Image 1 (cartoon, rainbow, N blue to C red):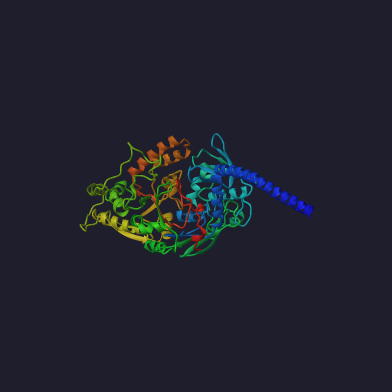
Image 2 (cartoon, one colour):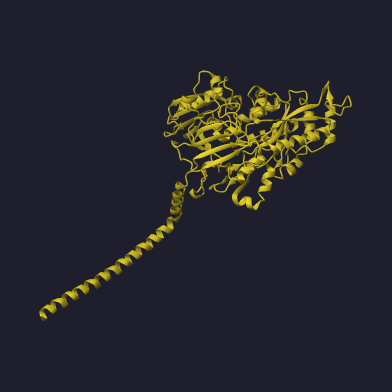
Length: 575
């Protein structure tokens, strides 16, 4: 009996010892675990930004989807990037979305960097430029992008049978393009050109697929206005003429796909209707009229739902009135200057632009080095009705029959003033110019037309006067606007300025690689244009955008907005 109790006592003691030992081991293990956790905490602290970045990226992967819906004031005439009818409205839809260049501008540094090309080389004399294409690039149909496509794009642009003189003039200094192999193409220049790297990267056009666009009849290519196919992150889907253009994300895209799966361009001819559509969340982004922006930016309820963006960048347009110098009315520069005198541009900026703009005297970006600077800056011509009347009389325009309207050689000074009916601002400007001109004995007949009709009249030079804006560029080449060779069909010298000094300077600008020396030439040109008044230079203004706040990563870069980096959190997606 006592023996059995002893055995039981022994085993109980042994069990208790084991329990105590396990507890001690557990405490040691906990201490080691605590030490490990401390080390892990310190490690996490050191990599926290990376962890957060990964977390944000994980969120963004889930936030793929939705659409960016534009309210666009103007419907383009073509989506063919190699066309005289390709304008800023066409490029907004196709450039970087559908068609891609060899090099792209960095939105912050505003310097060119590789894109379809993985690298490039420029010879010391600037006469040879070589591009090496990436190995992984392909069009949306899966066909690889090769040197053949690059050369096809170049040869199509310079083909005189192709209706693209406004683009071809940029390539006048290129001697030839040579295919080295499927991945390498080399361009040879006749002479140095300061924009050679930009134009040979096809920044404004993008690379066209030879197997899609190849033609035997140039007329066939010129008629190719829809169904664009490129290598970009979006694919053209539909064009419901008069209503909408729809792009969808290229799921076969060779690069990093954008988060937004669709881009939609809805066409509104009425700016009030587009603002109402934005308020109703039927569209996501609009370009407002200046007075609309001025009202809405101070609307607290509106700004809680929408970004009100106002920013300067090299792409902002300058606005002007163009005078057709081949008409009896405007061949004399005294007449052109006289009409500039009767337009109070300061008043236009203060009242029609609500102060959101600046009076200009030339075609260059006011915040750039090309603009004629103080203290030798070309000062704006003042508002001076008396001086305008004196100039008109010296030019032979007098009221010979007492009807209140000036005339010369039997022709009454009555001209049609063409402007886009899509712009409320242009309509008000036309009325203002007509009222002021009447005080000087000139009849201005407002002529509102659709932009597509205006563009046709400009390229054929069938007009008397018009108001419009030219969008700016990171590197400005004024040759296409003011050189006398560009007055022909398809050229952009719509007003017909033919001035030997202007021709010589614009040619010299092209050959001048040094930025400082080229800026001096811009300033000389600026002063000549200020005297000649081929345009009445009106004003420039910052870019305005109203955007739904559900879009994130909306960053204003030095080059403007990059819509390809926007996304919508999944919880706020609508489409």
